[in-house]
Length: 469
Ligand code: SAM
Ligand code: SF4
Image 1: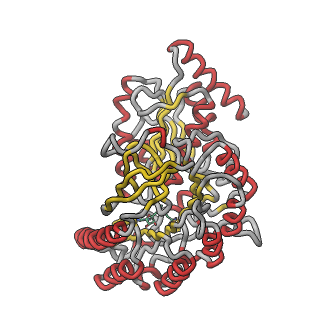
Image 2 (image 1 turned 120 degrees about the vertical axis):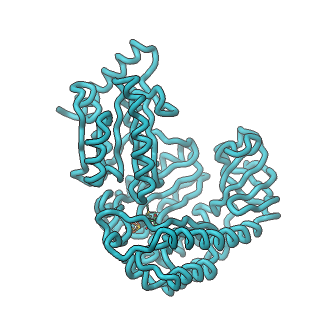
Image 3 (image 1 turned 30 degrees about the vertical axis):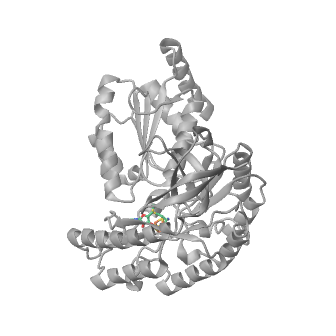
């Protein structure tokens, strides 16, 4: 059967549903994990909507539920398994409901088998790289009520798939997929395949379209954006791509993640500086996410990270030299196998030396099949004790750094109504700081200038100074 025939079967079903029920069947995609998964979920929703489904707000009442799972830490997997378990009663109440589980967790054979054997009400299981086959999977269930298990057998880049974005003014743009770095703790290379870059024409055309549609913030995504292009071009890298993107006219700001320190270049910093400093509306956000993972050179070696703390600090110093007010954030893993108290203190020292604006910290989680799983493990109690010491230190640094904003007027992209106070709007400044302020809802989706009056550890509060014209 052809792709069109698969799609026709699903469309016939969604049209029939509409005739009988007077509404389109709902699709709900629940995302676990990182921004890459969020971007993938927007594609899955886009495909379903094109097949005649309507986006639903929750699993309740949806005819198609897709769980897009994460495998980076055990906690994320256990959460996905537990929530999948809760779908059983929905399926009992509505046996026609289709349940799919996809993404990194089920790209691992042992997890695919768990779902297959212990969750018989899950109809479809597929991996991370075959979104375009969703019509085929759905048609199989609709026509034959068969269960479908489809681990990835190809990692080819799929261009031109429909996307239903969560936001009208913020967008993810994947510039590459997969990872070749094999950090010894990490499952990503096993579940997302080898590194592959999208063609620059495809990326530039997507960005151009988004800007013409009025999107204000575009985040370029990749597991290691600094090695963009290596699999495609001899002489065109991430810095070149950024330069080309910045030539696109419009009122928008570019972010990117994640940068691997071993591949971060001075050329990239120079391009950032040229497009962000001395401008009232910088094209590239003055914000850099640079995962350190550990402050101990011994541990970095065991992690297979290919940089030392000295290389790292020298890159940070170049970055700050060229863009003095750049905000730097990082990822740290606490309790990597064999980590001693001395290793851990070196991580604290790095936090004190770099003084990050923000960080994401993780307790090391054993990932089956990775080299670190076989190394000597640190006891859980030691890991959690170190984790809270590190959090205390970084929280005090974040608070001190946030306090420096008080009195400043910040340009903020207004994202919505605050989750904690419905009287307040919330948004982010260029440095990715969360900013709360009172203002009219019509500001959502535009830039506003906010005078900062108060700093807390995780956010800033202020007063609207002016709307951007
Ligand atoms: N490719 C990006 C990079 O290299 O920084 C991010 C990949 S991963 C999805 C995001 C973060 O999860 C990593 O930076 C790391 O700190 C953390 N992480 C990955 N594997 C982990 C593990 N087994 N246990 C705890 N944290 C982990
Ligand atoms: Fe995982 Fe390392 Fe690749 Fe990041 S660079 S995805 S941490 S293997």
